[in-house]
Image (tube, rainbow, N blue to C red):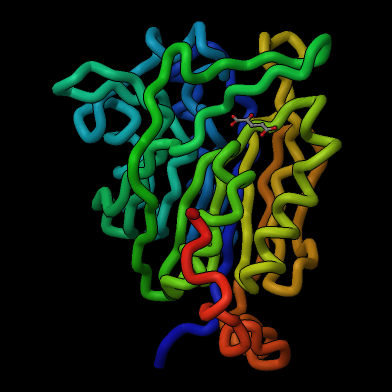
Length: 279
Ligand SMILES: O=C(O)CCC(=O)C(=O)O
């Protein structure tokens, strides 16, 4: 019998500048989520280092030959759960270029997917926030979906959520959920965070989950927090404020199918009218 419901946990981790402390804490929280029944556990963007272009080089690791991969692989195996390992600054072993990268593990601890952030966070809202991730990082060049016993799942990182095409392609490829490790901020968080998640979920009739670090007002970048899970009707099914927390939600595949059958957008699309959206 195929499983039709499973529990997802998003760990809104309090991240410090001490990498081994961050890894230890992430593993403990993963074990806590697993004890509470979670089968898919998500960590935040930049969970092993502070977020900021000045930190990427110092904290960067190889994937798979790095200590974060080792910790996450062991944690997935012990927790017997899929782990979406937030993101870490990754250094490519050959080119030495840096990426903002999410690694994904199955319940046996195998690394089954790797997503390099495709859309880099380069914005300039004068007097409010300026961030230029592309000064230090290179963008990834592929979209990422992976299979689980519950269904196919897509991954994006933070700014990737602003590009609807990515979630649309995932949904068209049969993904039941898009998961975004992310770290919005105190300017764009209140403006767009919830709206973007509900929009991606509703447009595509999929589950959407985000996982942010907890807010640290002593850090150089202040994360918005508010890790959230949204259902395929665009409704929030779990969320939190900005402190360290773990949120849980049931992903229900019967509900997923019911929503899609009730409002059957999938069979009503007019691909004859929008054949090439990239034009
Ligand atoms: O899109 C935003 O407003 C925030 C994006 C961000 O913080 C990121 O990509 O890391």
